[in-house]
Length: 340
Image 1 (cartoon, helix red, strand yellow):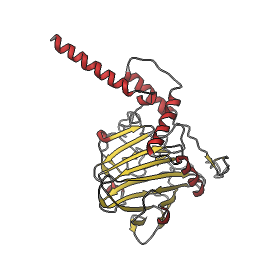
Image 2 (cartoon, rainbow, N blue to C red):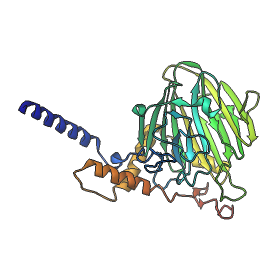
Image 3 (cartoon, helix red, strand yellow):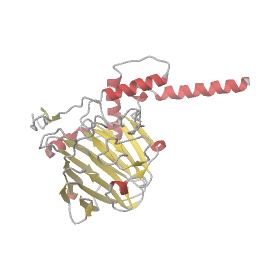
Image 4 (tube, rainbow, N blue to C red):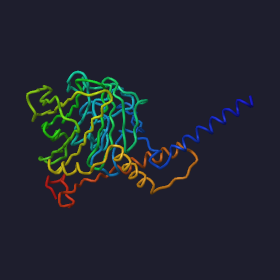
């Protein structure tokens, strides 16, 4: 019995040493998944995993809920429909200016149910500054690292003649245009839940590091390979390419409430950094902000709870401003629709 007790104590010591070795900053205590096991009948937090910087203008979230569903991500879900740029404060308030990106393989599909893929939390990494998940149905690994107004995506595809990326600008009025000569997609979404000026738009731009071998515009669910753009109640696009096993396709994404040109300027936040460098910079920002409060406690669960809540508290208010070509601070006013 004494040997068994010593063995148990030894295992506990090894576990504690391993856990403490993984903690090199306060952000390591944070789990963006805390509070996501929610539904209408019973909530444990009404949160979603916001992949973002503190007070960022844009967040990103793996989307398990259907378009327009305030519960964009719920822990009990087993399928991801897309990776959504979001500005949502809570499920009850819902979202505005949102659009989604989704890698698919095999058949070119746009419908959110058809493109959805099974995933497991065992193959999911969620931190405030970096997100990674394996999409089993498409055999694709998706990675995201954000800045305040932009994000770097990396899709690792299987060997496939038909690998695609879907861009869904959602309903309520949207526009998407594919520009093959620049490996680029631009567009806007007007999706909102009320309380916005009449000229409200969220303009976006995506730049890929691989030429397109397939292009299609989507209007009202119809995929048209003869068109490069669509303006519709619900517009979107598909682009595709042939990929080798393990081939990585990088996508740089940004948006603006001001103009398409400003979205291009916001894309420069990413600089020439790769996704690892962007994630590392994001990690430092989070550690700097969360590190302003130091908590001493021997209970790691207390530390996880505290810093996960502190992470939530510095997501808002968001930085609703953008930097123009002259370096001046500008913002689209949600009150009168003017750029001030």
